[in-house]
Length: 298
Image (cartoon, rainbow, N blue to C red):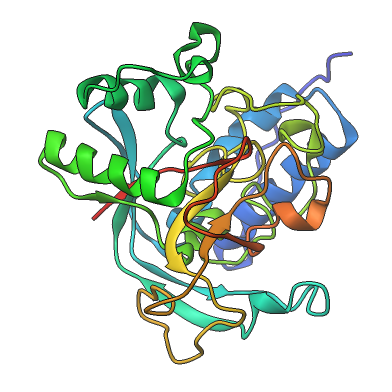
């Protein structure tokens, strides 16, 4: 059914117009309701694009632009402040506290996790003779690389830095949460409402999916695949509680036995785990089919 549109001319007191922040919030809520109801509204495409740039737009910053560095699409993330942590599930997830305002300086983050194709190029360049079939499979070239432990992901960052002449590293968990939540602290990278049909989780694919499969879902800064598909290694050592005084580009404790992972994966079955504030941890030597990584650059 097509709705007929009628143009009406009228004068409006500019002081009564909603602010830019109010308009963006209404558009975001509208898109979320359309998705939740499964309504095929073509017009939702436009507010969705606005939503993905919402955090930078509201803060008055320039919307992030893409830059390709050594075959990786990197998005410019502006400096900003946000409330890190959550008390939403304080009994089940006490490690998300204390909640405090954190500031980050500007940096670049890869739009997608590192893929099999990208990791295969690394293995070939360093002379690895036996490349695992899961990595060389052409049908999964765009899937995130998995079965990579923390040390191996750091080695990849060092190789990429040397090859490109730019400094690459793993993101801090503060940087990753900031990119996933934006400046106004949304629950999931796409908003506050659950949109399970757009995420690889609860065995929906029974394995990893291509990093760009859910291309229409992104964070406020346009970064993709931040929830579901694979957990991602962060640079920080894990601690059971945040260091409350560590608020400027926090990097976590100076030592530990486990490293932070973020994002949830195809293997998980709880909505709460896919929240942008949820924290996981594993030993640096651990690897599995649902942990990968992405890179950042200063």
